[in-house]
Length: 171
Image 1 (tube, helix red, strand yellow):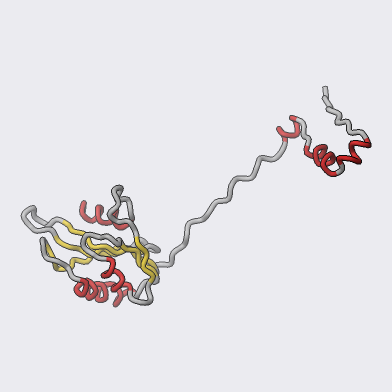
Image 2: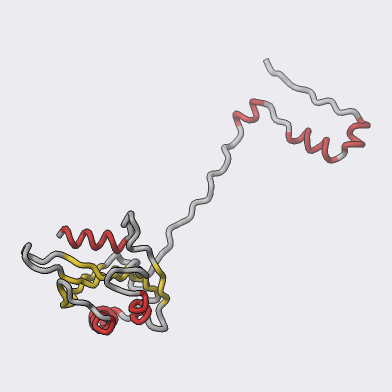
């Protein structure tokens, strides 16, 4: 049995209402139309950003325990490439309470990273790091590299470079 709902519009209402009445008549759909209609389109999906290898890096200095329990903690420069996931841990030669100044860090960075891989386009660093100041990161970045701050010392410690540090410390 087919039920048809008749929409009655008088000619005077049609002439008065004009486009509104015609739009209402066209918009009306029965339950069967709703059931057989196509589903609404899914929301757009954004694809992840593609980063070329050796163009963006994360950089930080971490302290790691010595090989034996009596050994002092060692300071290590951690650099991770965003595009490839390649990570480099460079022992700085400093341990315990020895301070690592910006010139020493710059020499290590230039000899071990830039001499081999070149300057990155973007450098991500912690502006309030324990071992590296923001001024030191600006000095390392130079004029050709964009420096972007990351909250490395946040309470949740879930950043890429922090995860890399934990992984290196466990091994």
